[in-house]
Length: 136
Image 1 (tube, rainbow, N blue to C red):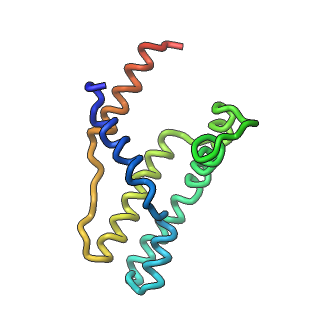
Image 2 (image 1 turned 180 degrees about the vertical axis):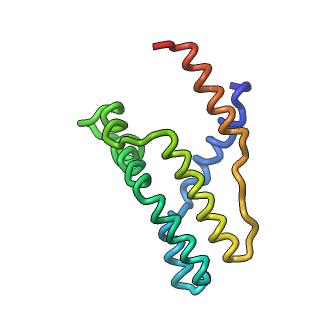
Image 3 (image 1 turned 45 degrees about the vertical axis):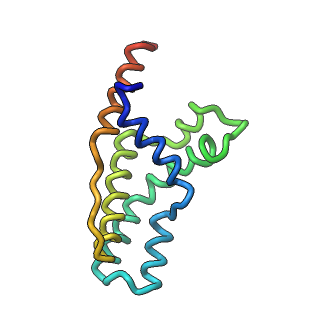
């Protein structure tokens, strides 16, 4: 576990802070309604949200059948097959979400954020280690 500490540190943190969250669509709507977004910032955010929508619908399939709710009629493999979500799509969605968050932060005069590479590197190393240990 110590070998992958960055992954577990951020995963645990995410579970604690995930209770008080707002999705980016709702946050954008609230900021638009409060007049907090310039026309340019709003156009940028809306374009990014539009770009994210097809992948978000795939993630929702997993959420609704595996994570937030567990479907008794569908296996994990069936849910992943139904979603048709690739790792590249998920990685791109993560980058889009960061761009949206940064556009909203900058609209409020707050500093932008970056992803720390440590947790990703540790997640990849953990998966590689597991793949070697379970070669089927």
